[in-house]
Image (cartoon, rainbow, N blue to C red; front, side):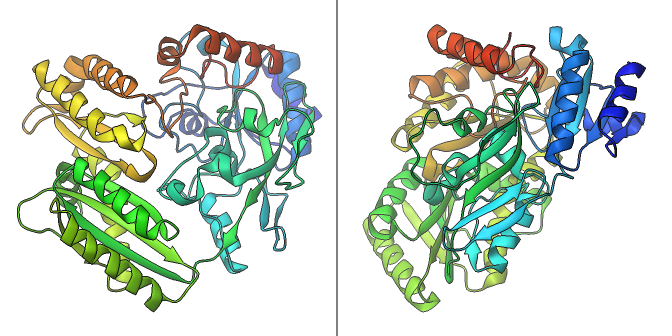
Length: 476
């Protein structure tokens, strides 16, 4: 493929083309180290014009493109495919981190327009410096990029109040498979002129086009913040408490995170932080409240509501309010370090599932009971965004058992049992992580034939040569 690379240099002057084996290996290894693939080169364009030229050149030479932002995805969607026909095809990795042409705020329209390469943290900081809040918040926000957030329809801890990335996007521009610039950045909240292409691109995981710029909603920056830690008996109690709180503090509640006892045990085993506990060990909830009013007013409302909660719901054992910024950071560190602590603890079977909030306790009990009935001993490390119905249902090897052996013996069965339970509860096998290559075959199994055929028709219409991210989401 020397001819391809020479043509690329000719057609895209100034393009950073890296063929170093170590750089390629790093770009072709996913965050979980589950996939280790290869590519002809790693490309780092600086602007939309260069991206267009790359797409046209790749199309001419039948070279596939895996678009990559921060490479923080959990389903292998940002690295070349490891199996099937797509794995044998010539490939490049196109990193978007240097695409930084636009970063601006329209205060009157309350919108922020940014290039795909900016990290989520940079966008948050930019909005904050102008007195606004960009509410998307993820554990990987220092590394993940806006383009990747859009391509994966990222969720995070504030979906309960502000919605996921789809709800935050008013317009985007993208490069299609012919190298043409498409889309709309006008930031309109009402626009009924034809099909809304942004919603095809959001969540498409780089399979339909390459997002270069987006216009996103921002909100007035909250002036006060109050964070509470609840000790509850179980997920049933946590769900009941959520409904109770929402009826009293719906406008203030921005995050509601549930963690089972084992999840906190894992964190405390790897980090020095300690969670508030009360009496007999149970589960935990982290609830965050924000307001445009004063901190005194917010804290008074939260304290009143949570005191009533303790009186009315016996299954809520204790409530601890963070007294300062340090305690707020401590509470959030307990929640956000679960994944890292579990990684240090050993390999585990991960699930990113969601169903209606009302059905979460039933799913929880059904899945664990089914696992027990199949005679599989597990350590369930369960946590997630209870407020929007999304749980990370992770299953580790029991104490004293080798993690790799546990996965070899039980991973397939555990996946089947958890997925069967979530589908029986009207849920989904992928809530916020996406499909990528990890769940591409599974998607075909759990989606109706008519829907899957429509997915394939869209892919064929928008990317007939299967140029963008082959082997991901849809199997063609």
